Length: 299
Image (cartoon, rainbow, N blue to C red; front, side):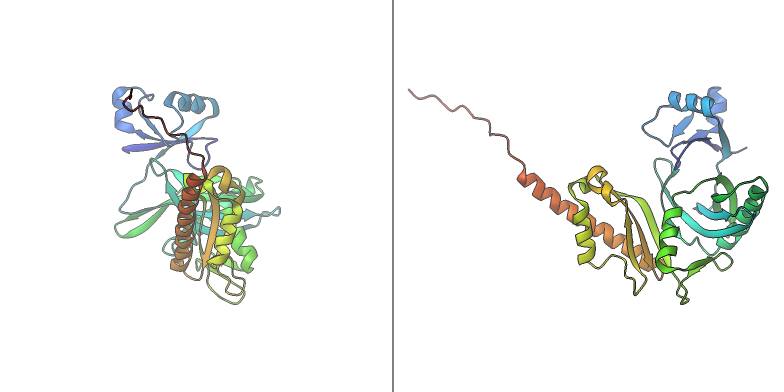
């Protein structure tokens, strides 16, 4: 019997509809209400269980191993029933229990990417027979067991997802294509490309910045997209910077390390800019008049 299970709401998004359940604890107490550990810290167990009863959900065994990854495969199903593997990604998860989607790395690790592509193709062909058309994705869990990676399919998402727009960005910018058998993305000139992407580069201090601040510093540091090198950072959600202190980006490089370095440099640049803007902002704020301290009276 598994030690931990995962509850998932049917309408959950980005892992926020997930909850961990200690199976032994739930069975021992005979009540589910005290068992779930919610991924959404702003929700309550009672509200979650009401949503579970209202919209439905599933229960999964939590798969564990020596090492743990969360890859996914993206597909496109044509009206004629043809299934195409568009991409594979390693999803970057975080949150209280590692269930919240924060971003992705492309392509997925070559040690298991061809295998999950093959399994996703089987799923896609079945979906095509059921009449599904358009983009969809299959999420996996990959664990290393006795030195070998073992993938398990866990979810089907009949929609565009968090990996859709980064892949569309690199496809549009480079006119390249992904080879699912080789687990490689190459441009028409044969150059390999990789990226790191997120919709969640955020911090409270970022709200002191404007989109123009961001675009100016990206240009000054030459971090933006370089069409000649076919590398650099493609930004999105820029207008959310001043409102929510958040931006999204796709950092594209020739190697995984170059893509990660671009992401890290932009984050460090943004952190420094926000710190400087915060100091300037505080200096510009009107100060409250100093309280008068009563001194000794003189007669």
